Image (tube, rainbow, N blue to C red; front, side, top):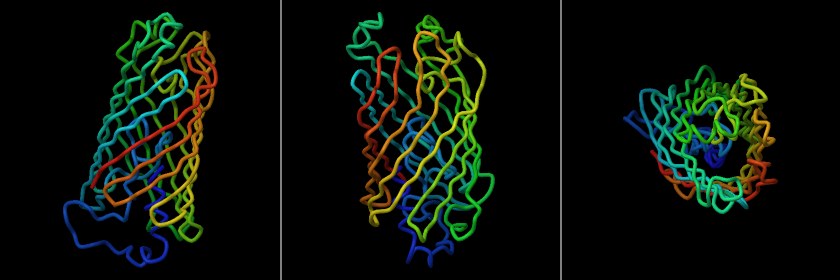
Length: 290
């Protein structure tokens, strides 16, 4: 999400600074081009991973960031914290820890009030082609291939509602295109997954246990050097017979007060979750990095 502020702010003076800066071990990228932390830990938007690599490191450098995110709907709360490291602006490694609190709804679901699911996500991403900034005047987007291994610690519970497994692996391909002159950033991602509610309700189910492609997209528009607005959408598989699963979307505003800090606030709609209808609420994320 907040990455768009830095990427799009590059239009104008930053375009003339595309030549690599003096070499150092870290810090060669333009403002926020390392991205913010997606809810599963990868660099990109809040819901959708992008083809960008985490941190400010360019070729021959490295960068890293830490993040904390809260998503709260009418009945549920999701807290995520994690770290991501980018090497040579080519490879990214990430680790995120999620806690999904059922709050009072846990009692209605037979789990007990305040019951929480815990999930760990280890990710990796490889930039295959293109450069979001250097190729901004060409048709070529930046393209990356990513993988996210997810493990849900509440295996017995997710199996009791129909999930086939407590662990799963998502594979995704992302393309990110920056249009500097128009102040616009576009991203499309295809994800192969069998995760239920991002893995928080396990993987596979009584309706399907197959990996199926899902579509994800993001768009951001620059309002000023430090501000951007945009929206994202993400489809999800519908594997569990006891509760339908729907697409998720958000509308966000991002603020980057410095190159080392970004804050993102969003209105988010996650659809129905575990028979509880129309889960909408807010998303707040903070990232610090170099």
